[in-house]
Length: 169
Image (cartoon, rainbow, N blue to C red; front, side):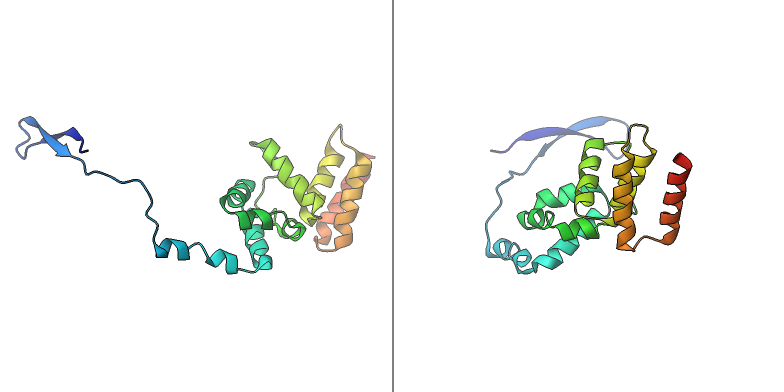
């Protein structure tokens, strides 16, 4: 069924306005199933699991929102996002130190990174525990010790951390 709508169009002399009927084309919103559509869904199944984990880790390093969007976009990415190795590889360099929005999502993301023994997450959570007035100092020290044992963090971060601890006592 064709529908009609009106569109205002001025004539070339711009002296008067007239209404011109414009017919819209009928539209079929159903996706047509063709062989090309079927073949475009297969390649992700051919990607090895460890490569999928690396892809998810790289995307997750940009933001926890990107991590969530990738996780819900495809079942294979969802399963790859549960891998502990992925949580270890996530870079938190671009993440804010203090989450100003979506705090619950951010906290869940950081907790998952910590459980996956992500060094940056252990360091951040440990410092947050130490600086918090209601924080658990022993828990913060444990997280910082785990981060220090990995020996990947620059020595300056660990040095700053222990100076901070000594000043607090």
